[in-house]
Figure (spheres, rainbow, N blue to C red):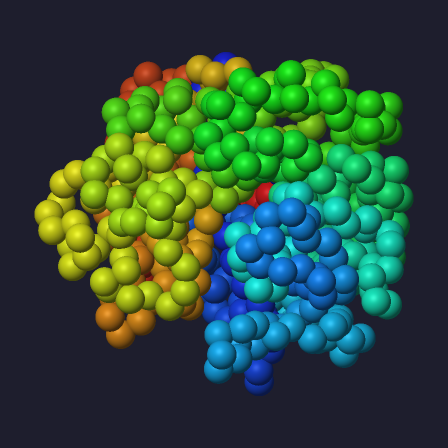
Length: 490
């Protein structure tokens, strides 16, 4: 990917959207379309040059009893489709080869839609416990090469995605694919197996590829910004408290990890994806966003892996996913103050849009533009400022992705984010993101032709600071893409 990277601004990246798939209903093709391809269509209108695809599959523990604090859930089998029973329980049948084939076919169609728009592809695969119960897959003990009732993680996730990518891309498509998403225990407990998965996925992606495409392929790993190993202190919710307690608690389990293989794994991947956002204060400044990356770097350092060294010396790329705030308190209540909203990154509303459940709506508990709605705008204005001026901070990211699902989906990308009652789409915030992306892409284009002296002149003359009207959404789909799409591909 070509980034505008100058001493004046550092790396300038857009705020890209995510295509979140929470089950078969979000990716399965019916006729010539799917919810996934429709999400790509909507995202293409939002000045995106790249998209993060988040396919979610499920796992089941046949023996797990919800509420039993003495039991640690483990995986019995993988499944693709959840069904909700009349008694409130959830059923999820074991994976079959037909499910795998349907998944591959559907993802190929969705990736191809992005390629048609000249949009680069990032893939962040995830596993989720089928019945919820607040069971985190970050602490899931899953070996990617071990069979669980007939299927390996490689079989149901990585290989279908690799084949789907192969069938969709051309030699101008850049692809970034994570081996896993926020499955910390799995990655840190089985680094050798993930090394093998890395090699197998790499070879599979190179089968029958367009000429010259291998240089556009990048494989990486994706981790939560804290609790990266999912191994201890999982009950501690506050990131700052967790980071303070971790070094002493880690001493008791440190011997269980293969540091040498972990170091080798992190040296072989092309990028690291960091998920989530640390709590903020209601009057935070753009630089406070870096606290999230500092917490991640500190915990990673306990494993002898220095993030700054990986980025500066080994040239690994750093991506940030699941960026946004959800608008609920940790107790599941609607935020009513700016302080509540500032703490709400991991807490939001899922499911079909309903006006009374919308934490940003004037028709919910928030009956005026202040303070929660004002904070939402303040949050994204500072977000755009942070990613525009990364040169001021220690860690510069190479890609940033919003989390477009539920009350985090302020662009209204996911189909469940809009209903007859309204939408999570927040017009003023959408304009902030569109303008940031337009300005960032403009700088990238100019940097290719004008170089450093030309960029300096434009900045000093305030040409790049001039805010032009952003009316992309009101134009026809193809017209908007012609205006904002770069002539080259990331």
